[in-house]
Length: 246
Image (cartoon, rainbow, N blue to C red):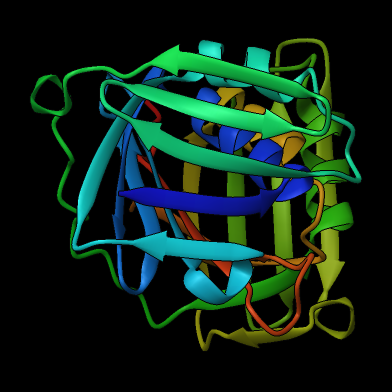
């Protein structure tokens, strides 16, 4: 049996993040909370979300369950709710029931065996920068109409995001004193597909800062948390393959 109650704001943000890369996802629910890992069909981007049981208004489960859902159907349910509400979630056979104020709605579950949970690759780097989400988003938006890729540079002096075309270019420069925390004793550079980054950054609404970690021509790791409940933060990880420049 599963009986959960979660804020609509949290559920919406989780769903928005997943929908940037997949149309279906499998959630694992156990005594510690709920988690989901998804990779896009091209294996370019991956998202991992961990929701501790303390983040739920109500959390009850017998044993362990896997819940596979169509993300668009889940989004259609969330659209019925007010952002200030909580949503009750109950598994009833092959359906998931939602209670949203005066509205009750259910959607059919997918077969969990049809969705493979990807393994998180062992991607580590000693170089990182913790930047404000608003600064990072501004740099991405500046490049949005210029190119389909963006090049990040991290050095002891700060962080840069550069994009160019034959007729335009944009560069965001964050000096060291504008970076919350960083570790870098050399200069590293790597390019990434801009489309994935823009979808990702637009899906996050409650995060103030992002930890960016990468190396030369190496996957990007973005660690973040959804800060709506300071005592029970939802932890997130976004991984993105590099764009190899010719």
